[in-house]
Length: 112
Image (tube, rainbow, N blue to C red; front, top):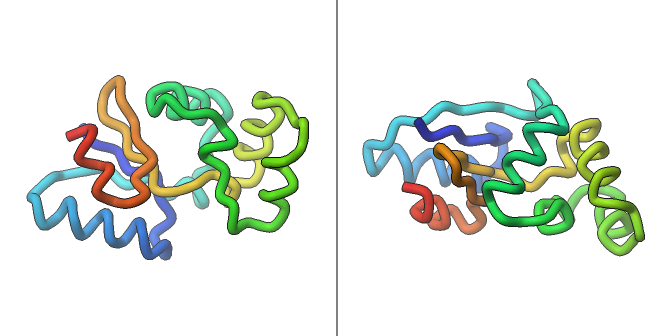
């Protein structure tokens, strides 16, 4: 099963959905802005993707640059991502024991 953690109004998320639909790939959508991800799930996704929280920080969000350049711990950054879902980059695609930050959307091919 393929799960896409997204924000439906995000252009990149919509492009990813189009790419998957064109390839006939079924997937589950999770709007993590409506149903925020708990810290444990964010940790799991980052571990599966092999990236740290700073790499998954959405730099377009207010305060993200300051957070990225600060000495805030990874644990505190993940806690903030759980509290403020907009700080987490999107879309993230999970399949089994692997995940990928699908930017650009073609990165999804790594987990198919």
